[in-house]
Image 1: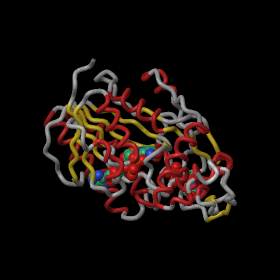
Image 2 (image 1 turned 90 degrees about the vertical axis):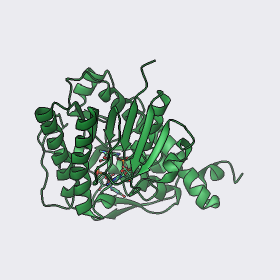
Image 3 (image 1 turned 120 degrees about the vertical axis):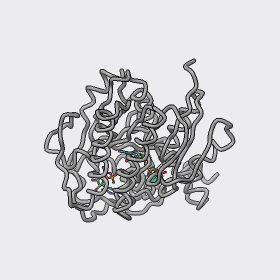
Image 4 (image 1 turned 60 degrees about the horizontal axis):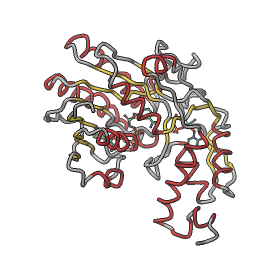
Length: 330
Ligand code: NAD
Ligand code: UDP
């Protein structure tokens, strides 16, 4: 077995972070999870709290952090448009000041540092699918800019720390990922549609629903992140991680209705400003470098995610449980 490391996961109580903490603990590491609970929850990490190798620290990464670790996964940042647009100034601070603080920490303790960057660095892309060499089409003054430009600036900082201070960095550009432990009110499309379908409420299609996304299931994403961190020291990325199977938003809605057996109808809502029309990663580099490709098909991933939300909703409203309906009320 590889030797145990002391690993910091920022944003560790969030959707991806909590799965990552679990995975790293499973590999025999010590995990320090740092989170300010802006979008993360105690429930996401409750099952880890009794593990003697797990430690939680409530902390905002826009403030300096003094700890001793071997590796850092920097995931702290709200990822859903409604959450990152709620306090856009804080979103930029989290990406930029958070990166400066975590890079400073990595420099002091000589830790390798991973950055959870995003497909949003490509903005509304004019090149399709998006390779890492594409420089993007971001509106710097739009409502998504606090996230997109914050993440772009974080990438800049990572590469300058690498060039200037010889820091070992790994930058991954994550594309739409979904799965259990997304927040019930996350606002992102997969969780919205599933929760609406389970409640038999209207499914809100923004615009015509012809815009596309490629959805990666969380287990595939975590596998890729761990492999990115394990690449040779000279490899920095950026590297795209995500699914290359593209769906329209309308197709996603119909799949969710079919898999939940919901009575929900589709309703159209205004398309948010700067909403990218199409998105699909070119994952040739990930396939070559990580010997990785997504393995969980959308239908399978949706079933797991539906089961999760059904359970979350049923603990709030027992009568609404899909499982109960399927099992004839038992
Ligand atoms: P999430 O909102 O569930 O998790 C983010 C976590 O960061 C939360 O626990 C939140 O409380 C914490 N956080 C926010 N600001 C903080 C701060 N200032 N200090 C400390 N903690 C803070 O979102 P997620 O989907 O798990 O995303 C995790 C990371 O992956 C983010 O950096 C996001 O930008 C990136 N990412 C995710 C996706 C995706 O589809 N899930 C896609 C691209 C990039
Ligand atoms: N979307 C939608 N209905 C919803 C939530 C989102 O039609 O209830 C659309 C949104 O406009 C976007 C796509 O789904 O085109 C993906 O949105 P999400 O917020 O999940 O992530 P994004 O990729 O835009 O960051």
